[in-house]
Length: 65
Image (cartoon, rainbow, N blue to C red; front, side, top):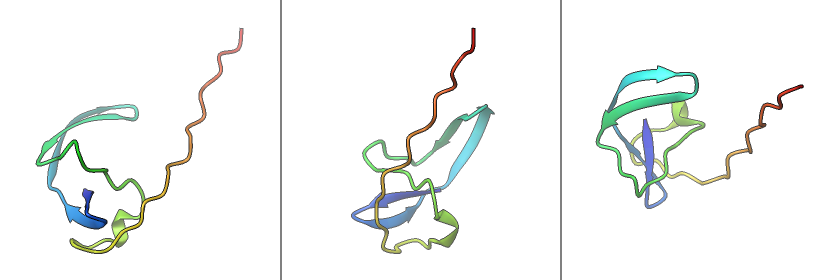
């Protein structure tokens, strides 16, 4: 996993403890002050320059009555 540190990728090693749906519990050296790379991380190397884009809004499920 990568986080963004001063507009550069910083590799973070994590363990996935469990997942349910789109929610996962992880442990590792994660900083709550840094953004997590969600897309394109397969192209990154530690220290590579990154640019930030807003993630597309998720569509909400509408319940039909």
